[in-house]
Image 1: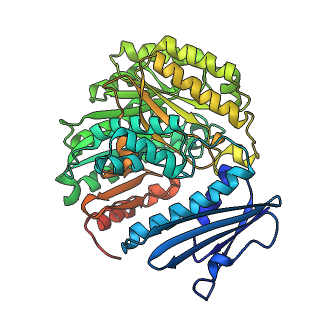
Image 2: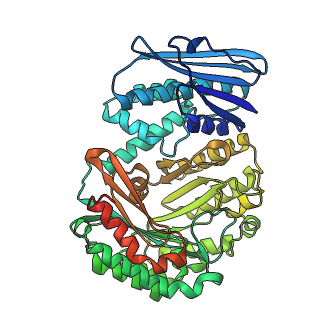
Image 3: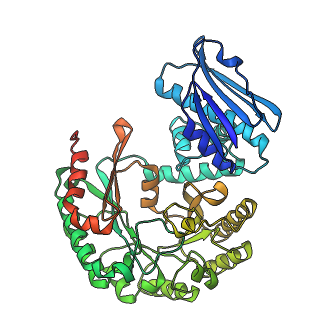
Length: 499
């Protein structure tokens, strides 16, 4: 186990996240010193020890990272003038600390790490800042490579995605908001799932009550002055699998949204149908009748053996049938999700999946890299990746090649903790079919009011560069009893009430 002594800074979280990138375990020990100028002389005492030292001297920021790893001595030193802007100086200190730790770990572990020192969820935000600073493409790519050690192909991907997002996000209109509606029911719970989802066999008797309480939350929130005066930009109904509900229950939710918000000028209305066994022509006609413009039908894989292994009750043929049914109902904008790194899947199986999806030719594909979350069945059963990091890299490259051959371009990207290969999730689409809500939820430039169990409202104050998260309770039973509290939570933040 590595021992990392952090002198004069408390960036333990950032260091720990970098250790995970290299699949290393280590202990971060905060340390202090008293005499100015002494710090830079401190050296590691033992093997497999790293010292990260931050010092302010002569109006300069100096960060030295010194390691004695497997008896090999290495040193990485950076310095810069202080700006006397606390936020900018803090960012610079953190950057130098991460770069130093990364440089030493990279020498210790010979591993392809295409995202460099980046461990956050939204790497595109870096590029958005550079675009706002009017940097040209070559400058942005060079910054991503030299400052953050990002591989060139990932830097190019980031730039392409960020420029597509930029057209959707700007100019910002603070009078526009989006709506998210959570329907936390599914036919079964997939083994990889960590979302607040309730299998119908256990919780199906609560759907009618849930819809009533959900509509109550929608109606009461819509009456708040700070919501009532806003224009609705997008609506996203997700879960769970919202199409697990009956067509009557679905219609009640859609009718509630229609009656409480002005939806005449929305740019996008998404219903995440997801599981094909829940989709009927009757439900599709309900979606269509209420103005839904985009739906998801999500295979995750087109290999029947894997579908059974991950506890999904449908088969690959059901995906094709549901897709054709949706086309017959008049839907032209259809997204399909797949997951890279599912248990026992290899690149040949992924290639089969991509071939089947290519034959279908949806307007959107979202490629997820498996993330093994704490609340998932995979985590509970101590699942370890069946594919190596290099195989996962080949898999994500394969999906990119298929997307290109289908005329699909990357339009949004995000990352999660505990992803196999430390990679990313990417949304691809045909030109003009960008998922607007997906971009807004990732880039956090627009307020999103969320309803239902497990939903999280994000209230954006762009002038203050501030975001307030207002979570609803995750438990289905608790939500049914506490709808008024969920409305009140939103009201307090929206109206600036300090508790």
